[in-house]
Length: 169
Image 1 (cartoon, rainbow, N blue to C red):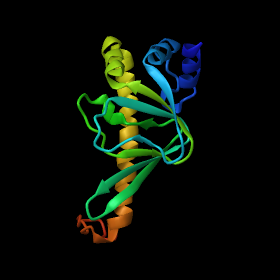
Image 2: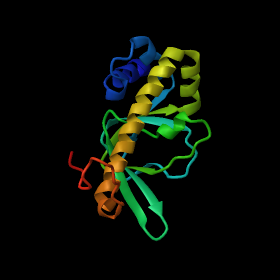
Image 3: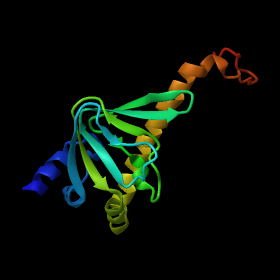
């Protein structure tokens, strides 16, 4: 019964959209569902990345802290999205604190077990990593847009022959 519920939950997560049933079944074997109350920490910045998460429902704040600046929310992750992707790299540490902004449900995968699945089924491993890379690329782009928004006027203008310095083509 638990496995069927997990498979059903996994099949409804956007990140896993269109994965074959056999792969969802394999994922369900290394997954567990966790619920978090509003403002509860899912994982802290700097901790060993021993898990990978998919948000089922709710919203999660990704926060970073720095001396002299304090803690700042850098991104909000919602239902269907990947969380804690650092766990896909053996020995990595988490680069942000994840905090539920409201009651939130996630599926947690043990990183070592998930990576073992990827090694056992290379097609599945490639597909999972392709999807993870797409999620990381979206986060990187969002971060670039934030930098431009916050520091855009302070960046030096790039001169390029044939292109006006105001960026018009």
